[in-house]
Length: 144
Image 1 (cartoon, rainbow, N blue to C red):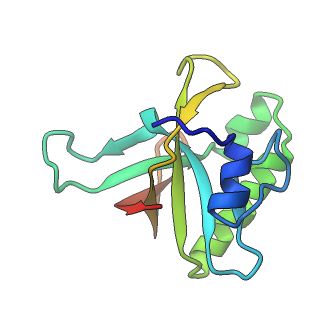
Image 2: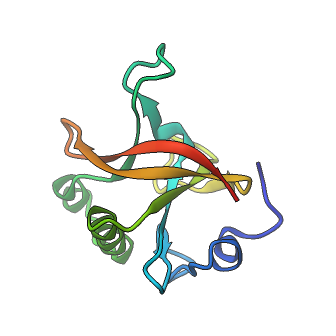
């Protein structure tokens, strides 16, 4: 799963979508408007029915704004993620770069590794949780 390239290099070289900022960006869009790439956490990818492999799969892509503000958060990364999600909602194809956290309970999270072998398609279908988080539907694997 791990790659020789840093995730910053991966976005720039393999995806042709450089991160705006290597320290805080959560994704990137191609300059020609042909794709959006969002980093997503592996442990946050969930099926509606874990026992049914045909059940829709979703991943958290945005914390609730109120929860974010209440936690003291102001973030250029969050603002950038909102812009990326707006691109997806306007029809730009989107893909997820799957990251694995060193410790899923730690905040902020630190990345242990990322999947450099394939992306996942992110569909233009959204859902909000009871907690106010935004989920996006996960589609098929896309080989790189």
